[in-house]
Length: 521
Image 1 (cartoon, helix red, strand yellow):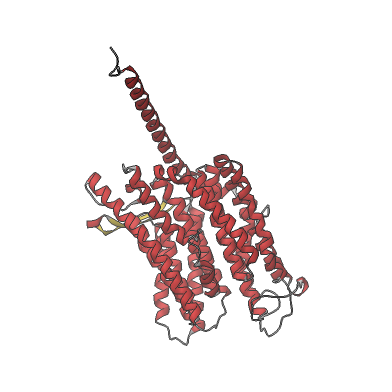
Image 2 (cartoon, rainbow, N blue to C red):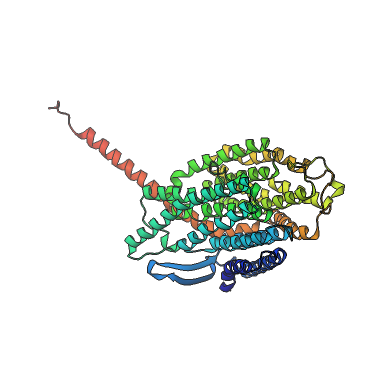
């Protein structure tokens, strides 16, 4: 079955190359072909999920081929309980974004090519087990997203796209330096170069070295995850991209940042992570506080969704920094939930914008009878965003808060449930987005079947995760248990060092007290 996982990378990338050969005037055909390929990738992901054995520990569907043997680089991929849900998320978001796009919109060929390319690159990031291969996809993924943000021209779009690419490149460079250093350290330790994740785990890195390597990884993933204060690119990029690009940006790109923090930072550098955990916790609190204030003054619809994303990524960091199994499981759930919720909100907002164009992106009134399905869908998505019980947002929030409380006390409890301040900020999506006159619009008042097929699977996943979170928690348990085992070992080393330092100080004190002074006999 490993060929299916390989196909999930190369099918969309190959499909993008095929679309390049189509005449530029065949916009509709390009979209249909891209939609077919995205649908096939989604079906392959479902097949992988159906054959995935949660009772088996370790990585499954492993495929490995030598790539650059002289440097120890290989095409090494596989999935475990942590990476598989995000592979499915990327496939679902790409399919939904293409399906919700206007069939014959201007520039649809370019959008289709970029979406397929982004799907392949993001999938490659989530399944890579070789850090050089991971970095290759990690560096390649911003390029199609850059194109999606800047497509169809315009000064503001180009500015947003260039700003996004600058942030992405700035975050990638420290990660590259850290990966190369790790590989070279392994060469000095064992005599051969290697970039495999398991080959680089457990290297006898000094604490000071771990610290700067951890910070290099953290900066790279914090930029992708839009963590405060590295978030300023998000609202503009998300607001300028077409809906298919915005969905992948908010649901896939931000998830990659959180996934990197979960997968690599505490696993590769446990001693340094213990040292910095309080700083990470403080950064999470800053992100939560900032997003709660910002959302109260935000009026742009996509800006509201960007504020929601910033808040969610702060909560993800809170759960990771707790270094508790519940907190880390909650971070994984919250990250997956955020991708689904943000994508659903963006799709629904785009559907509203098509129906109610008034120039300032705001809609007046509430008219549930005129479009009941659209209004109910929006209500479910907003309820999930504010962590309403029974929906995926709450299923991720609760273990994050409990893990944070166990690690940091009452302040984590208060800050975690501060997400309910988002309810006030997100109300404009309901008050301004569920009614109003349908003027100057060719769209039907309620959901078209194509729009329903795009958004309803997202909402179904949101409800199912909220009601039945246990399967995902079980899938996350084994990868995070490995991380916490390394954290426990780091804590033991830290305790031994403290005892040794204390013993030396006590010995020095005894020696000094027993040494006679010059004035004595």
